[in-house]
Image (cartoon, rainbow, N blue to C red; front, side, top):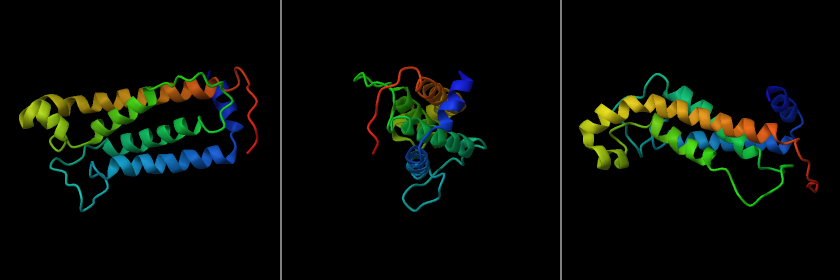
Length: 155
């Protein structure tokens, strides 16, 4: 599987690499601004970020970019169904790196003390789950690209 992954990445066209880079940058900004990992005047963070938050965000953003790029001029046959694990993993990354008491959904569900007692200790697990799902989806998509070739018109 690893050799198929590397060999399939080596034949990617330039536009796939550009899409991967642009989507990774967008994913980083879209998560980093509201979680205040990039300081900004619109959002504030009550609890400082953990030591692993930036690394988890960078890795999840890169994996998201690569995953989205697999859909650009993909030789995989379209079945009409999509795998939603990438979307779920990106949402998990948002919850993993966010401030536990700044997230309105968590506060409504658990309250301030519940967010600190129950949600904050789960955040590293959410980060690991997010990265695992993104990596699994990416490996699955890329390693299957040469399994069944479908002609794609050159653009």
